[in-house]
Image (cartoon, rainbow, N blue to C red; front, side, top):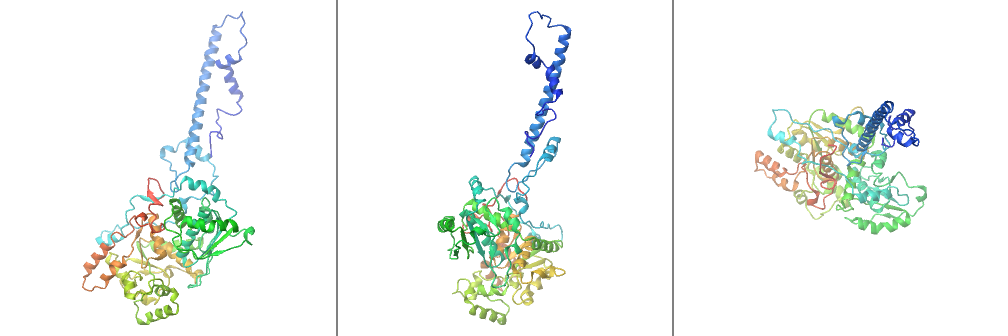
Length: 569
């Protein structure tokens, strides 16, 4: 950076030139400093020659003084301009130069500024952004259709990851930790693993430990053996978090033979205090702590700085690996270029029907298959075992099937010509499972249809990579609708809010399903009821503080988003 100490003026230098000494010798100041002792016999001080020399030296002195002042002002302004351009700012604010600032002074400052911090990650450049939403400009669209594509008002909320001074001071030590190491084994599907990685970073921060790049456990359902580096950009992960937690690729040789206790019995809703009391002494003694079974165990209620850290990990640090990112963006552009589109996360996979204890709606043949699998593996059934299928469905515990999703979209004003992207694994029942949706919306597209020339061939049997591609395409959709909430639904809800409040429709299953079964209601009345039930659940800013058990990843306001003038969006 150019400063007043390093920028040298052409008028003031560390070693004055002979011309400088010459000017100084002619000045009145020089005559006072260097004048010889007065001679009592010298009385002719006011002769014409002396007066001429005096006025000449006076003029030259003022000229020199003027040049000196001008040089000082130039250096001062250049220095202050340089400091302005490089001064710390909020994570999402970037210095902007007004037209009046393109002066020679600022230009010199810009050209003189060195890039010492090229390796410093910029949060404004690290967040995964969607393609811009489409505007509805056609005049021949109905009011219902226009309302369906309309994006919610963000009310001025923008990302604001401004960590406290105390957090930043503690970072100086934590980011250089070399004695204590945390190893985390993440299980489940991609978005379940993402949640555990977010919590792993927060726990490492709580314990003041270095985090070893998380281990992804082999998925027993899909048989995916992908490692962290296969799915995520490891270098970006480390750089983005370098001010928060030290991240290393593996344990150092000094810790390989350390006692490594594997902790897998962690209760739900544990606090930072519980984490410190339970693990700090053990970690300090053994040097290594291994955690398994971390899924959603960390409290949703954390101090503000730790909530901001969760957002930083989820929306900035966990960037997908370059090959996945490039292919996902390519498919997203192919969808986007044709106009506005809907992304549906349809949870119609076989394991979802087994785990939820719900019926597929595809007939007794398919339901019998699910029932037999569930009876042979009862451990897969999640909660509320004493409820019947009907009770589960009316309680909103079952995913919407293709017919129910089609009816909801039509009622909310989606045109039949809309392009629909299906995110998710292969549905149980294949084409039969999607047929009711395709009948109402013929332009149904999957990643397999969008891909060309074997672009997906390298990801066969790689469920995590395929889920990452779905995530990238879905983020750029104009409207996103999940059929069953879940980890991807929550992640997409928060991410879409974080990047500009893109429309997100959360089906109000518990309230709407009774009307689906009431054949006495007319189509017009049904549409009116559906729009009313979902008028406040379409991506508008919603405070996490209203319900303290909400995850900040799904509800980033107010901890990670606030109303302020500057931002990248």
